[in-house]
Length: 145
Image 1 (cartoon, rainbow, N blue to C red):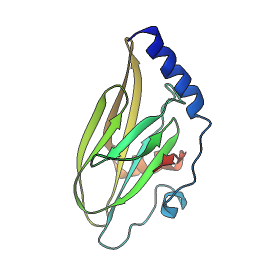
Image 2 (spheres, helix red, strand yellow; image 1 turned 135 degrees about the vertical axis):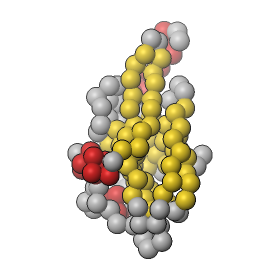
Image 3 (cartoon, rainbow, N blue to C red; image 1 turned 135 degrees about the horizontal axis):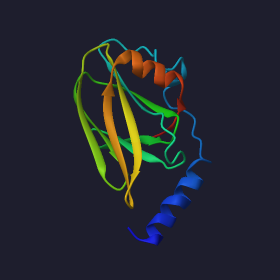
Image 4 (cartoon, one colour; image 1 turned 120 degrees about the vertical axis):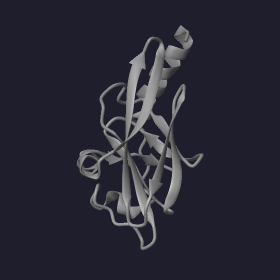
């Protein structure tokens, strides 16, 4: 990665912290971590709690479709059909996580970010529902699509 790319990342991170978009799904804001899903549906939270590059947005894809971007201390929520799904966390490289969701289940996925040697890495990890709900309660809704 050259200095121009690094400068672009820093500039993007600085500007991203200024954007705010109202949520599309009211369950995502009432109260976080304990949302109820419609009968026969499931839900997924993606949250980011670390402070590494706090304003750097990371795009999140669900089954190949963009659902929003996270910055530090934010979360995304989507109601989904039960079954097998793939989450993607896209930055310089894409991290993927496949998971199964059962009807009525809410899946919690932690999105980590760290700076490597001239590269920014992201990773998705499924976490226990108690830990996930606690982390989501400490975050705010991220920019959704």
